[in-house]
Image (cartoon, rainbow, N blue to C red):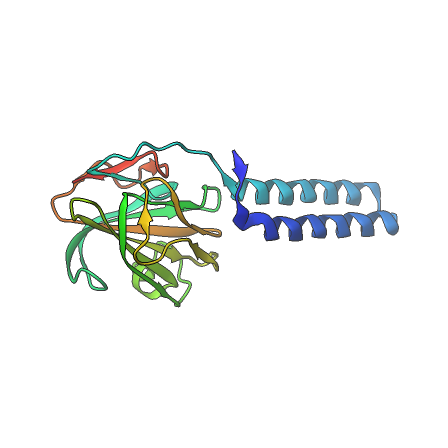
Length: 217
């Protein structure tokens, strides 16, 4: 387990805040019960930041024809829908909600060539809102595998998630299981898969990035 690079600034701010409030409490000789309350809250803040930005080390053996889960969380949508940004046809949508306690690293579901990438500024509706996939701040990535099959996936900001980070661009070659981005705080990742894809998860399932098999071509 390691600490993700996206959390360095947040951790530094948290440590500075903890140092200041503890120094102020000591300087003004706060009552003992108040000091203990500050110590407990300081420990809680530090542990929360560390657990949120944790980044488990994962070794993935890429598999052709397999679609791995791009994020830790819970499956909240599995449905046939119209995808109107890139494919302009019907696809199977699988959506994963990431709560604040989940690992927030995002990983490539398949290996291949990035054929499309776009960042969209937008709203910050709650991540489970039906329109969050089209109205919220988000990124859209499409990867084509060596057999010509394309998967579209979106990072979607939520009510608390105000920073989406991505590490890919068009024409990049990506490897299944490697990081393609990070979303701070509660958020969502959508997958759009070809019709006929065998779906291996159900609504309500808890899933793990780069471990759970979402489906197979």
